[in-house]
Length: 179
Image 1 (cartoon, helix red, strand yellow):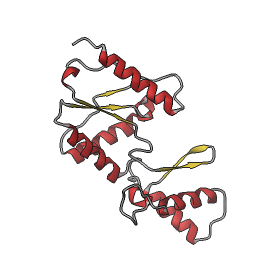
Image 2 (cartoon, rainbow, N blue to C red):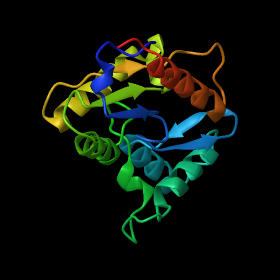
Image 3 (spheres, rainbow, N blue to C red):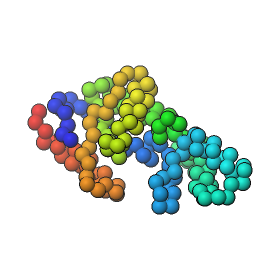
Image 4 (cartoon, one colour):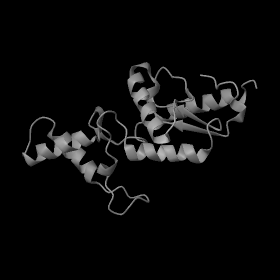
């Protein structure tokens, strides 16, 4: 998607990939990631207390191990990943989304910063998630928020390099966009 007219006044572009940035998940052998949601952690704790050993018990152990792991990397010494648990209504951590809001605010006034969605959440089947995320960010910013743009989709996006390619394509279009 080409940058919008008037993009010459944009001073900062934030490219947002949601999964692993605004939410926490754990790799699950061959399956979709196990999302670290508050409700999921509570259920996993209950299953563990009951001594559950059935199908899925490995996933329960994995989810609890992630939730108890220390974050490190400049976080409070005792902060675990559980403190970043995703909301129950959408796979987004309130703490992590508030940090994005701080970045948006630090980047400048509306019109000086452009937030471009590069995540799989830009796909049509994730429209509801995207709208929910925009609502969360609107509440945290205390103003209406919608993504300024999205990067184009490749036929197959599987690797980090694929995401970098679409970001590069976007920047290339921006560079040569008529003013």
